[in-house]
Image (cartoon, rainbow, N blue to C red; front, side):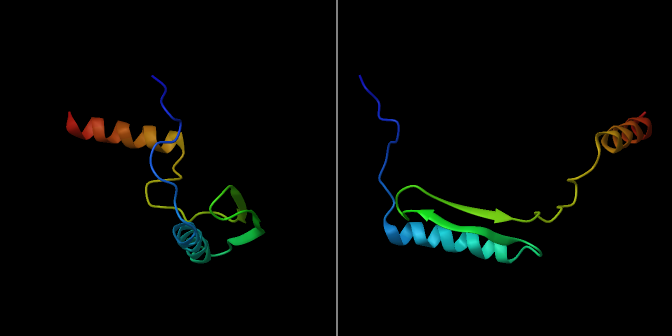
Length: 80
């Protein structure tokens, strides 16, 4: 029995353009982010778009490993 690598249907061009629009909108919402290199390839086929910038820090991310270990020690000490 042979199983296809990609099961399901292929997205139509409108769906692909919608996804690309949502990605560009999310990038526009990030301060300092921009589209570095325009769309290369074919929408609905294989295409690439390069973006540049940093994602905003979400609380809880960006802590150093040492800071996380220190927090665990404090929680363990307060529990016992």
